[in-house]
Amino acid sequence: MMNIMNIGSYKAVICYDPDLELFRGEFVGLNGGADFYAADVEGLHREGKLSLKVFLDACARRGIQPRKRRSGRFNVRIDHELHAAIAAAARAEGKSLNQWVENVLKEHAHDSG
Image (cartoon, rainbow, N blue to C red):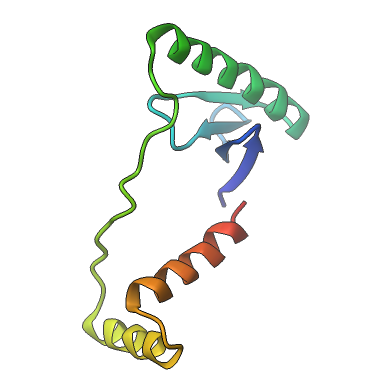
């Protein structure tokens, strides 16, 4: 199971590495890689803050924006029957398919952290 930890205004996905017997955090949405390891939650916060600081400092020195910029568009391929079902659900709520899908995605993305 994967979990999300907030460190400052940045999100990191946390998972357990059984080979190292440590938790691993990896920041998401960055213009590069920044990860960290610790044995417990307190250590994850401490190591995550340190890793993020090193990453942000490197970005500042190089004049790089730390966050990836997303276009706001992506394509999803789904079964035609599911497409018809969600189109009908959107119509029943008086929404466009895009509005309906965006609302569902927002609801679930906020549930994850």
